[in-house]
Length: 172
Image 1 (cartoon, one colour):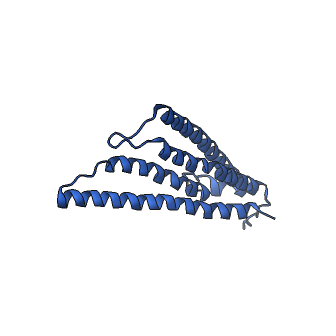
Image 2: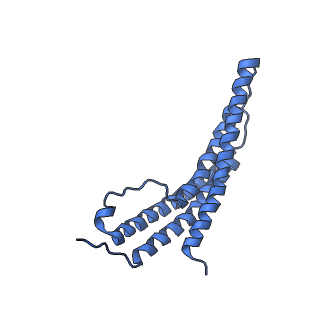
Image 3: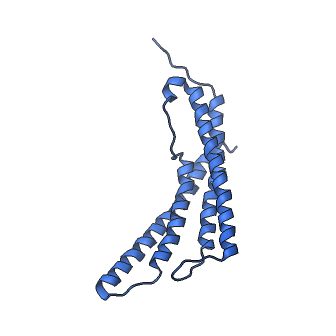
């Protein structure tokens, strides 16, 4: 039987693979930047489109980090009352936090897809070398959309913790 914990583990592993896209993008960006600086400093040659390429690479790099942050619940949360309110109520707040993140990523995904369709309709491209923008934003929108099922699993897991039997601490 497949448990929620098993699914969470698989999602984290899968999200780590997706975050490699970001790592490779950063490596590519650093190679392009160092190459452009060296060519300019040593030979006085300017590579056209370095800024254009870096602008597009950063979009994918940033978006590729969101699924892992969601899977590991690495987003900002405030845990002021947690120890004082008891484990069940704390799990309820965790579930609420996961629900808010789920709604946020749903809204963000919808807005990103609206932007992608706008880019397609207007045929926008970068200024210098005219690289089309929409393919890069499609990748970013897909990566952000992956956060929706991840946040749903986090929400269900947190909600399940609310209804599990809680260990009561013994006070002397």
